[in-house]
Length: 299
Image (cartoon, rainbow, N blue to C red):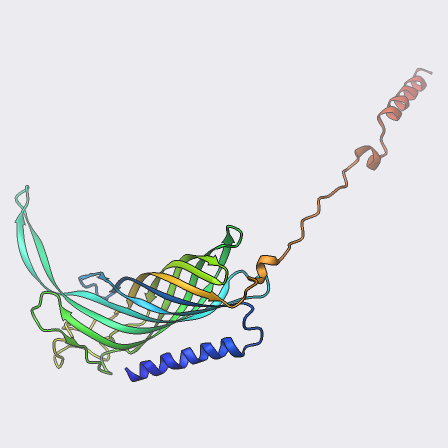
């Protein structure tokens, strides 16, 4: 936990130093607070029974830098986010066989779910293309990011209350603290002088596993109730879908440089092609020449 706080402190200090020490830092920089909620799950392989975990909270700080050159539309930046991730895993089930109209019996399963919440620090490295509407008062954008993550702590519970809840104990041979993945999203922001208020949605797609595969950790024979997997999954990446409110401050009173770029109008071609002039032909002269040729023929 202390290590996670150290990481947050280091990144915040780095952002503040960048904004205050970089030359012309106030020209094209935006600092934004974000907060919202969403859903989380895991993609297990081999497939397991899962369902979405609702109420996955997230909040953080975003920094964006907008290029001074108008041909580069959009921004690059970095986010620091706290995000609740996790999954609901059907660790057991009861069966009921229901007779169908054709006389066959169909099995109906009722699953009992284990829930695990994971508190994670996310560090997306973001590219954000955008465009403006409503006389530069509305900004529409999309985001694409490479995401690094660090899992601070975790908590588990059995939703059927069969077993008591508790703190998830991390084991080096079994659990991964660090992770990576991709992120994509879209949103909009309304510009009120130097303040930006907006809404965005994004999808975090995990590539790394929350649990190490069977080559390193096979079964839960030495574990407690914190690990419901009899055999460790081969793959266990985490996914999140979140909707967030954003409130940002733009460090430029005038506005972004790209607003004031006056593009040259394409000049229309004034010249027109004159067939008679280019070929030396003239309707009147051609008629007289033909007449002369006719008279010559009669002689």
